[in-house]
Image (cartoon, rainbow, N blue to C red; front, top):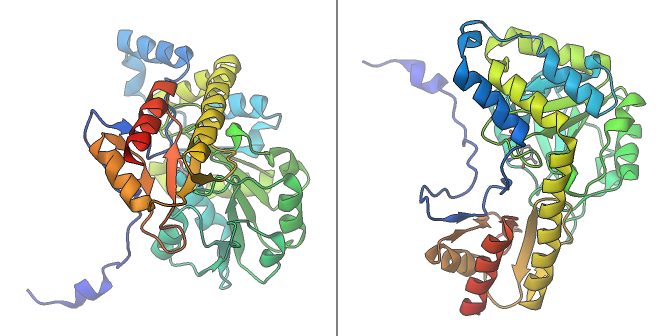
Length: 353
Ligand code: PMP
């Protein structure tokens, strides 16, 4: 049947997190996941539900109080300064809807997390990318221009570069009319968190995730910290989209994870130690590797192209991330796995070169 409805179907390029592999034998170093399991306290939550799942017949507490309180305590803020969601992608998506409602474009770096443009297209908000310099550095003064909001990951992805807090202050102070979002997905691996600054700057929102430093990518838990006004606005948007409520198990798992600070530190420190060792080894192999404040390394080789290294490693069942994207198409992003996994990757590279 003919009809004009096809003209009204949304036409966007969906978000794709690079090439995927379902091969269980692959050493997976392509998605910045944590190689260590979640806290043992998380396992206890699942054991509890395995014994008695009666609680699941009830709807989750839509206020997500237990998790908010645990996060508030850990980050030294009040419950009303915390928003939680199903992964930080959800939190960021809701933030765009809540705060970026001007005709002016929102700003973010040209080399950054590729979810931002997709979400802008989906909810139809204008955006403008601000070029990073030839060393992939972001400069605060480039953000002094008129805008409808700003989002910057710190540390940035996939470059792994972290900016000091002065940079955040600079951007926020020059943009009193905009909400500024700092996406701190990787901050626990060596970045400087702007959470404390949200107490002073009411237009600053910081987002974080449990997917990386807390080994819970599969659970989908993320959060934002900001002024009461920003958080209350986010809650209003969330309550208008019922599907954004977190499930009961995720709330308990997140709480158990936040409360196990010792295990968290242990895992993060192991990842950092491996990262620094592997960085040195890659440099010795002829790579130029950015100083990383994340759980991945951003590297380019002096002789071999990123694509050929990526393809070769795949034949050795090692899966890293290659970007078929202008400016970074000769760079690789290598997530930090366990020591033995990284050793296999280094050995495969040595064979290749
Ligand atoms: N921000 C950045 C910069 C990321 O790289 C990611 C993970 N791909 C996210 C946010 C989203 O993470 P999650 O939804 O798993 O919390």
